[in-house]
Length: 312
Image (tube, rainbow, N blue to C red; front, side):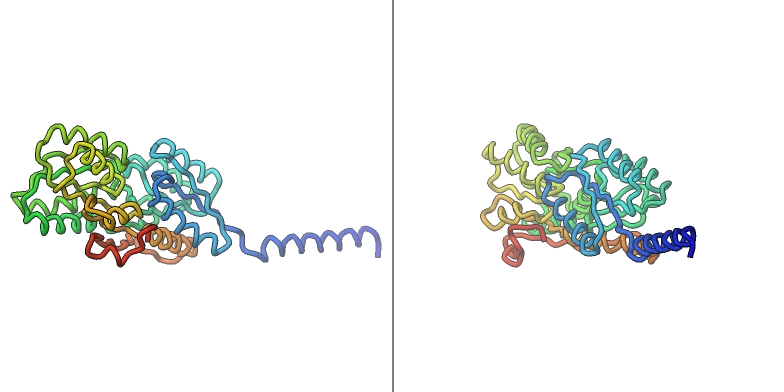
């Protein structure tokens, strides 16, 4: 056998070995995820739910924190696209403003799985996995009606650009509009942030001598309102509602009468279901465009049935 023949045989063996190592084992999938921020325990739990599924399959999740900045979130998604990730998980800061990033992903044929916060342009995403946010608002309103008999001066602290918050507010209003004794005396944006809610609530307290109910778009908002009411010595007798079922909210319900109730979401479940949906989409399977995760009202009557120190 000539040296040339030996070289050819050796080359074939090397190529075959390389081919086996490349094609014999499945390529690791890489996913991108961007939430509102990762200093909010809710989004940490959601992100961990996704990560649990992804890493259990030997794949990788890259999480980007836009820190409540839409421009940063759009840039983060564009970076995911440039990295050619397999799919992207998004909790949109602005349900309409996020559109340019969704279009970028669509052009790159990278599926987007929306988690928690729906987007306006649903044709640009593969599926939306979110809490039943409308029902969260309904549950808070129904509880409030039972406690007040349908007569109350109500403050609503909302988030005008997050669809999840919009749905909660509209669900709440859909119930109270049936009761003429329920009056919305103030409705202002707090954008889901405790410090903003506190400042906004301070101004509302100064402008209104009688406040019976505060509906917060999430638990941090409710806690900001409570802090302002407490500081002004106006908390007694005021019903305060949140949405999330956060550990801090559940502790507050168990330990005292500051927070009336929270419509509990289950962010870990949203993350798990979102990740499972992503794998089905990548496998070419049919997935519903709108996957709803149930919510539950937690108050003093059932707090002992729930895990206090973590999101469920």
